[in-house]
Image (cartoon, rainbow, N blue to C red):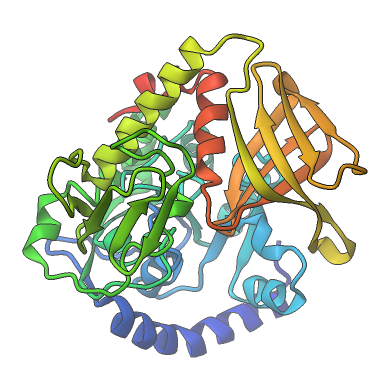
Length: 405
C-alpha cells in the first residue's frame, strides 16, 4: 500500500501531468467521449477497458479525475531506472505478462480496500489484429470481494490509430464509451455475470467495426512493421518471406504484393494475386494454416523455425543483453536454439515445460522454463508466429471456442 507521502506525491504528479498528457494525446489521437456515457464515479472502483494501443492507459486515465493505480506489464519496470521511476510515480504497478500473478492480484485488492481506483486491461496485452483477446476469469472475483463500482470503457479507433506492430500513427478518431455498475448492482450479480458483463461491454473488432468507416483515418508508411505480425504469403504460402515498404507488403519468394489502407484492408497490386481481405481475415487464415501444419506434421519433423534470431539473457538490473545469433526451431516435444557459431552450445527446452510465452517490445519472443526466462529477438521477421504455434500446440483452440462473446 502507498504511504501517505507516496499518495500525496502521486496525486500532485497526476494533477500536473493529466492536462499536459491529455493535450498531447488528444492532438495525437483525437479521442472523444461517446454519447450516452456514464460519469466516472468517485473511488474506489475497478476500471476495465479493451486494449489495442500503447496509449490506452493515458486516454482512459484522462477521463478519471482521481489519480489511478494502473496494473501494467512488468517488462516496463525492468532495466531502465528512469522509466521504472516514472511508472511508479504515475501509480503503475507490475504484473507478469501472460501468466497468473497472485502478488499483483493481492495488491489490487489491497488498493481497492484502501479506497483507491485501479485500472486493469483484462486482456493482459494489446490486441494483435484489432479484435479484443480472451478475457480470463479472476478479475470478477476481485471486484466482488472489494464491493466497489465497476467502470467499463469501450474504445474503438484505437487500434487503427496505432497498431501495435506499426512504426507510425494514423490520424483518425478514438471514441471512448463509459458504463458504470455500482456496488449494489455488482452485489446482485454472480461472478459469472460480472465477467460476462465485462467481456460483452469491452469487446471490439476495430478492423471490422462499421463505426470506424464513418471516420477518415490517414497515415503514411502504413505497412511498415507488419512483417512483425504476419509471416505466411497468401499467394505461395512461403514463410518469413514478407517485407514491407511504405504502404506495401511483398513476398520475396513469389513477388506477390498487396497495399494496405488506413482501415487495414489489403488489396492485390497486380492481377491473379490471391485476395487477402482485411488484416483480421489474413490473421484468421494464418491460424488455419498453423493448425493444419500442426495436424499434418510428423512427430520427427521440425514444426517451424526462424533464422538469424538473437538469444538474450538477463543482465544486471533486469536489462537483457544480446548473447548469440542462431536458429530457433520447434518440434512437437522441444524448442531448440542452435548458434550460428559452430562452437556455440545448442540449447534445448522440453515443450511441455515451456510457460508464460509472450511477445515483448514488438520484436521479442519470451518464454519461461521453471524460474528461468529466455528471450529471442527478431529483426525483420515475425516473433508472433511462435506465439501462434505454441498456443495451438498447447490447446488454445479450445480456449477460443469457449471465450467468445
